[in-house]
Amino acid sequence: MTTTMSALFDLPEPLDVVGMEAVSEAARSATVAQNKAGATRLEAAHVIVEQMARLAEESEEVDRARGGRGLPAYARLDPQSRARDHLAAACQLTCWHAGRLVTAGVQIHTRLPRLRQAVGRGLVPEQLAIDLACRLAGVPDASVAAVEREVVAGIVADVTDGDRPSRSAVESAVDRAVEQHDPGAAEDATREASRSRRVRFRPTRNGMATLWATLPVAAAEFLRQRIEGDAQAAAAVGERGTIDQLRADALAALAVYTPAGATTVEAGPDGEPMEVVEAVPFGGLPRPGVGNATAGGQPVRISVIAATARGLPNRVEFVHGAYSSFEWLCRELMDGDDQDQDEVRVRFEVVDPAPGALDSPDHALRYVLTPAMVERIRLRDGTCRHPGCSVAAAHCDIDHVIAFNTTEPELGGPSTEWNLVCLCRKHHLEKTFGHNAYRPGPLGELVIITDTGHEHRTRPSGPLARAREQIRHDAWNTHLERLIAEDGHLTNPPGISRRRRPPIPRHRRRSAAASRSAPRA
Image (cartoon, rainbow, N blue to C red; front, side, top):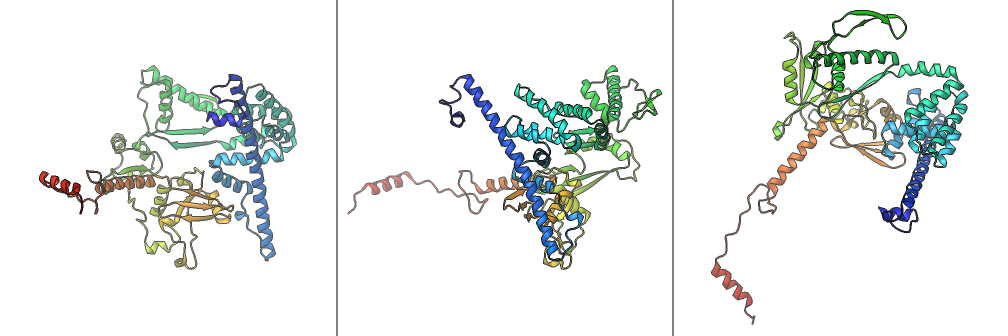
């Protein structure tokens, strides 16, 4: 690596033997080169958007020339969305990062000339340019020039002085500039931001999950006070755990518990009076479980992927949640609240992991899928199958890779497992009305051939696919154990013990050696 870097920057010796000044200058030169490469990527994203737009216009013109009326509104794909999907596969990016790259590229080359100049000179890192361009995308055209001039000048000065601003610092600088040059736009941005409020859950490892929330400041402050008060009250009575752990327990307890305390009236987020329950000291914060969930009228759905017949333990998969063990499930069932015996507390669904287990000639000729098949495809895929897309399978459409023939179903596009994949609504429209080609595989593989001729392959990553991988791994190890004998040689047929030759008597070994050493006539 040092030799390659030395040749790249015309250094006389490898980096590990030259002086510190030369090494520092090499690093600075590499940074400028990286920034200029980022400028090239941003320009490429903009050019791809223009090419996608021209391709759509040409298709419309050809359709009208043939007497058509053009595509309906729902079939017209946004050029920026198409460019995002193309770059997500071509550059190995997530759809989120590819979308920001496209937005920044378009903004820089259409609305932000000063930022474009700074990026082209290699002064601004690519990620910083993307953060700034995406933030300026929401500034109205009437004031964007003044805001850009002020913000870009400050950022270039900071970067030149060796102080790179963070994303939050960039957003704050833009907010201050917008308030100064367009106060009305700042108020509109505040109202628009309230529409972005949301809460997201994402399962992580070891039975944990993360929660992300975007809330109005006033509502977030009320929630913070409630969580902090409950955590401090629990700590005051000796509840075990750090304050961070107690805050997490207090947040989880909100799902099943309301503390009893004095009720006061305070001003709410909108200025109207609202009742607030004061937290009181208590111990043993309740924690949500299966019993609490079923008490709310929502039975827990659990899929059990059968593998015992193949020598592996069954896998428990919560359809809406993280992977858990049998021990966890049993403990939660025993600790849950008492329920009416007539109510269904937990619904188990045993899933056969064998590919095509639910396929049948009758169902293959029906366009509408059975609920069991829909759940099976979602368990197999895990997420949207377009490269870089992480939309959960629960929020995706189930699409036929080879389109279902509604007039003559026997001619193609069967409703079988190998021909079905999960696609989010955006990528479903891209597949239906775009120009890519799609090819399915027997175990859920999906090959996408773009209009540029590049092939991209995705594989299912859901719990059913993971169970199949484990089953295949175990079956292969078992096959090797039967195929290779104790002496390290292959056996044929597998599993048959190799018969060893009986040892040759010593006198026969001596006579054989003598006959080999005797001269021939």
